[in-house]
Image (tube, rainbow, N blue to C red; front, top):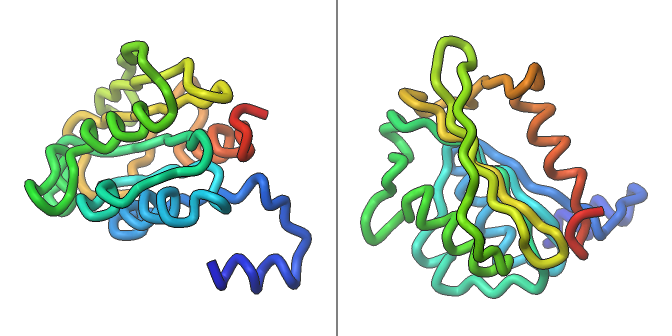
Length: 172
C-alpha cells in the first residue's frame, strides 16, 4: 500500500489499472494483494504459486478481480494440489475467485502443444463486470516461470494482454 503511494506520488498512475504478477512466493503474494488491497489492485497473474489458507479466509474483495494463473502439474515447490492446511490447490483457489467474481458457468477447456508440452487452457467467463479468469495448466510443468505460447503469443505477452484488458469496473 505504501509502495503504491510512493510510486503514485512520483509518476502518473491510472489507479483503476494496478496489476500484480509474480512467481512462486511472489505469485502467492499476488493473491494476498488481490484480497487485502482490493481497493487498489485490479487484476492478478500468479505463475507457479498458490493461495494461502489464511488469505482466503480473510478475503473480501471490493470489486470483480480478473485472474490468470499459470501452473505446472509437476511443481514440487508449489504442488498443483496444494499443501493441506497451508496452501490451496490451484483449483480451490480459482473456485474461490470464481465465486467472488460471480462466475457460475463451467470453464471451457482447450488443449494445445507448446514447447513439447501439453497445455490445457481453462477459461472461466461471465463474471461480474465481464471479468474472466484463465488457467494455463502445463502438463508435466515444474516450478518455473513457465514459457508457453498460445496461438503464437508467449507467456509475458499473454499476461499483459489479459491484465491490461481490465480496470476496477471489469473489462475495459
